Amino acid sequence: MERDLAIRLDGVGRRYALRGPWVLRGVDLGIGAGTLVRIEGANGTGKSTLLRLLAGIDAPSEGRREGRPRTAFVPERFPASLPFSAVGYLTHLGRVHGLARGAAERSAEQWLERFGAGGYARTPLAELSKGSSQKVAVAQALLADPELLVLDEAWTGLDAAARAELDRAVAERRAAGGAVVFVDHDPRRLLGATDETYAVVGAALNRRTESGTWGEGEGGGSAAPPAGPTVVIEAQGPLGAELPPSVASAVTGIGEPTPEGVTRLSVPESRSDVVLKELLMARPPWHVVTVGGAGPTVSSASASASASDSASASASASVSSSLSVDGGEPR
Ligand SMILES: Nc1ncnc2c1ncn2[C@@H]1O[C@H](COP(=O)(O)OP(=O)(O)OP(=O)(O)O)[C@@H](O)[C@H]1O
Image 1: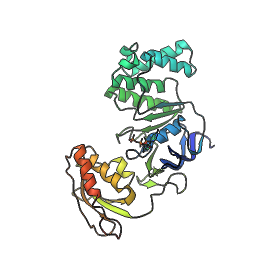
Image 2: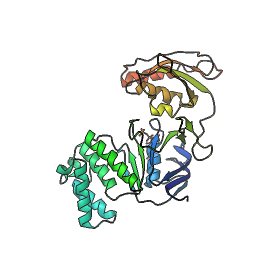
Image 3: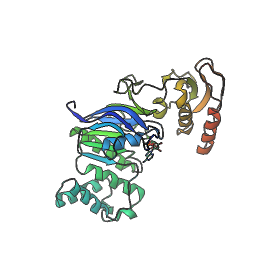
Image 4: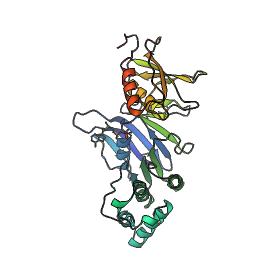
């Protein structure tokens, strides 16, 4: 293992059933000590699966996880109904992490205070609000100074002060030489502080290069975009809006926006439905202007920019049913 790597995934694949579809395959990923790494990807692509593998609470179906950093994990869903008070639970975990009782209790109380949940220290977990419960979820990960901190949507449900506190805690971890890996739906989360960004696409991991395009993962080709036909989507975003990260990670080409704000996207056909859905469900939604083959646009469709979720989904379905592919007939 290279020096200064907190952890490394080597040729890692994960599927949830024998002969089931691979959620991840051929993933090679090294996380350096003291680095902050963002993982992106459309819904259901395998971000949480990757985080669980990194955190060591799930095992790869193939490949290896190398390195044994002291790891803490904030899961997407925290089991809030455990039979403990907030401080009792955190003290118990502190002891599991090797702290003496007194030190564990002090650390538990300090972290609850930092996240503005000191007043709920003696409240049973099952009685906490969703936001307070999330504060406990975050505190449990921070109390033993992890060398690898894995955060799955950890900011979701926190109030603004607690979100800022978590940003600070992440900076402190890094300053102490810890690595932090996170998934978050907000593309601005820790923007500027992030060292590396990867996207899960089609079971592989793509790394964002410095120019903002998506390169191959470390596996030397394992993260190449799927071969096959390409669909061109022209989409118009809300004024000044950036392309949703989940879309940016799924496309193979992004044109310069026109003065009217229409951006031309090249998308592998196998990802086009996901990209259309992500555009239409973005907040605020994007307007899909045309959908066609890589040559001249051969079909067009539009969707209301103020569509509700269900309307967006049905608009997506009607758009995708009019897709055409390279050199082919409209479907
Ligand atoms: N324990 C499990 N058993 C079976 N299938 C699973 C399990 N966990 C995840 N999956 C499947 O693996 C795929 C990837 O799921 P995962 O939760 O990792 O994606 P995600 O990108 O984190 O999704 P989201 O953005 O919705 O949180 C999905 O098809 C999901 O249904």
